[in-house]
Amino acid sequence: MFKYKSLLAAMTLVALIMIGCNENTTDVADTAPSAPTGMMATSLGADKIAVMWTSPTAGTFTSYKLQLTATGVDTTFTVDKAVNAYELSGLTEGTIYKFSLKSVNGTAMSATAATISWSPASRFTTIGGNEIRLYETSASKGSGLRLYNSTTKTPEVLSISSGDNWDIGIFNRDLPDSLDTGSPGALNLTINKPRATLIGKIYNNVNSLDEIYEAADLTVLAAGAYTLPNVATGGIAFVVKTADGNFAKILVKSNGGKILQGTAPDRYVAVEFSYQMVAGVPHAGMNSSGVK
Image (cartoon, rainbow, N blue to C red; front, side, top):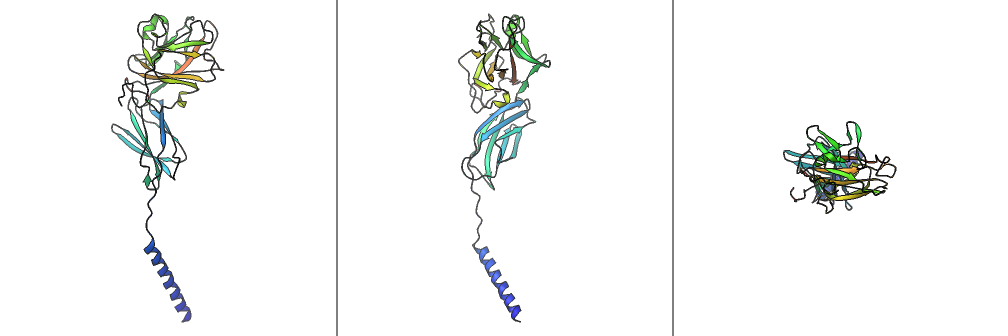
């Protein structure tokens, strides 16, 4: 009998404690974390974009929510907190996608988002399986580049006699350690049709277009041509807008610390580029007129 009463008393005490705990417990809302910042993007191909950002510097967060928005598209992805970059494929060239990223802490999200708008662009690294080379003007080979021929569906390397179809070209003005690049009109090659305008800025010491992320809108540069140094540890890239309204990001590659490669009179620069097939669609969030 004693054992039964003791057990019953103990059970009653535990029940009272549990009831007391239940009466004094309230749900604590998750604290909204700080937002990520510095959203940037780059085109990896005709159907692929990569974005990157700076992680929150204060507060606790458990993951990210990345929202992709375009006409007829509204998709949300959960992104691991340990990463600060993300690739998305299956996209459509010429469509401008808005990326909106928030940090997440349980059920709470940051009050603001890091955002950027971007469109994928085609990538060209070869012509007919061969490296794209533009030769100095003293060479018999082509020194101008037509970024895209809509009939052949490829870029073209052209000589000065076909200069009206150039978008950009190179011109060595008897300077042993440098060369000029830009639109044919800016290079003073007696070509009357300026085909491209330099846009954005010059990117130094890059080895791949995949390394170049943009955060700001692109604007027209004052210079019509740019002097490339012959000695460069890495490649040099720049953005152009063609006369037809297509944007392209061009990388002039470095090999062995040199931009100008080969031997005279057939020295050359090797290039690769991304090219937006849809006119008027920029590489960055706005075009030069400020229209989304």
